Amino acid sequence: MASQQVPVTVLLQPAGLTAAHNRTEVTKFGGTTHFGFLTLPNFSMIAFSSAIEVLRMANYISGQPLYRWSVISLDGQSVPASNGLPVSPTLTLEQAGIPDVLFVCGGVHIHDAVNEKLSAFLLKLARSNVKLGGICTGSYALVKAGLMNGYQCAIHWENISALREEFPKVQFSEGLFAIDRERLSCSGGTAPIDLMLHLTAASFGKTLAAEISEQFILERIRDSTYQQHIPIAARLGFSRKELIEVARLMESHIEETLPFDEIARLVGLSQRQLQRMFKYYLDVTPTHYYLQLRLRRARELLLQTAMSIMSVTVACGFQSSCHFSKAYRNQFGRSPSGERHLHHPFLAAADHLPLLDAIGLPERSDLENIFDADGQ
Figure 1: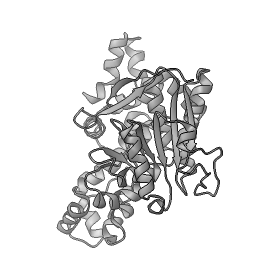
Figure 2: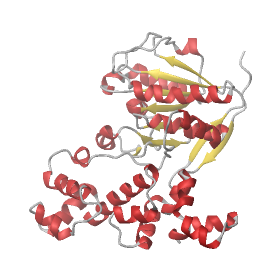
Figure 3: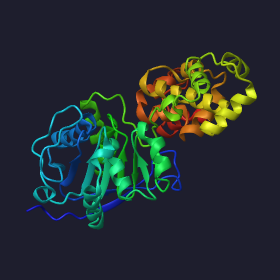
């Protein structure tokens, strides 16, 4: 018989967000945490396996049964994934036992997989205080059952626009994942790795999460503030080809930015027409959209390369490191040096090697001030 588990609720708040933006609750257990994965027809195998592999690796590295997991279907029969492969063993809920957290695993043709029987199943679990989550389009099953009303919900970018129109009570997020009280949701692909690493870090510490990421040869662990890259064509469809062409021009001119009047000329529109089009379809100005593109590229370079912060500044079209730092902090909630120090402390130190050589090795508090100097 499993040992009795005493839940401890820990409030987590992603860096750069205030409590008003995001309230995250993760429950830690004194014993082995049981995750259930409810597989729907044509579920995404990469998203499903990404989640489970983190749990397996956590047990392997720690040498302890921190997690156990069950693959579940409504009738206990194996369900083929979108690649045609089934998973065995697959159990009924009764055979598996009530999990601490149940993830609904979706994929393509999700509307065909969600029905009243599934909604009733999920509503019953919610009444039993089981934490519920969705992986890839599995979040749609929770949305359809009304279980995400008033909650933040992450789902694959292909589905966001249509679902926002159909379910206005749900706070759809364009982030990789969202944790809102007793609801967890994830966009799909490899993003479940980041979600499960986040949960592991909350329960067992960042060191274990880092060791798991090293085993998976991950360059970094992305947090819930990391946005899915949603192609503009997916946001708008192809009804406004001029707007899509503007976005492509901007994306191809990051370092040497194009003046606004030149962009308008190249797509055959007046500046006023372009302003109105961006406001109507994207609710931003062209200048702000261009800035967001450049800052997103800057974040990728900071996290994925060893380029110095000054080199990133130039590569993303900023003439002033002060302007870059201020814009970056406004967008992501931390300075460029703070971002790099959080994810790659050795690279952050390298950014300041000339200064350190000149003044000698500083105390820890002085070093932290140096790391953040470009953002003050």
